[in-house]
Image 1: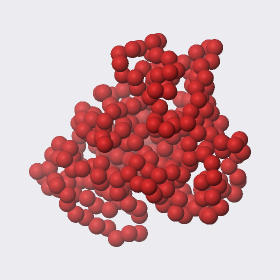
Image 2: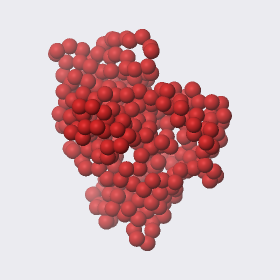
Image 3: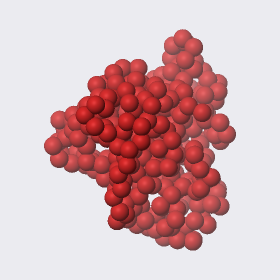
Image 4: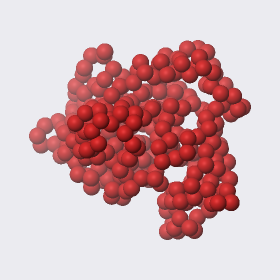
Length: 307
């Protein structure tokens, strides 16, 4: 356990969160306002911390949307979720536990920033889990590091026409509707350097094949993070076929190694009403404990940082 530290920056207070680099961001005093977060340099804090828990500012949904816009060059979405405002979507992923994953990590549209806003916290369960990919990579066996450094992971799945077209229209952002976009728009909006192949089926659905390394540099660092969606969920979507690029499966002993390491360094966020969590999606994986109280509301937003 690292020693707890607290200091102030601008008009917010920063406190060490958990055993890793995470930070708790709270008001400095009773005179602090939610808009103080606009000038708090959350993106700079995130570059060091990996994830931030912003607490006790009592934001509205509109406030949350405004904060996302303040730190984002553009937003993206999950086409299977419902919007609340112009940036936030309601998280609706069943009640089972969700494995650690990078948001949209099995696609060429993984955002740089991942935001959560707890409008109403559950009375028990449903904690969000976070796992710093730096800590995972540093603790994996030499064999596992060699295996993951040798070749990328391959993700293959089919997406219904309604969902891929909704995504393509949103990303294009030029006023065209879902019925007016094409597969070419998906290629045009994929993250720079993404290795992906799209094939539109005769029924309008889309098959894609995406390759990306499980361990890689991050948005703000050349340091290697093991951050991926090997353990991720497939709620609302077909489960992807996951293997190495050469078609081979991840060896059982390597799988056992990364499961053991991720469990050792995973931390929990026990939500309180009004909390906001900001995650570096290129570095820190997240998941969720099983929901035991369904009377909860968590909003999510996905975005790209301002350069």
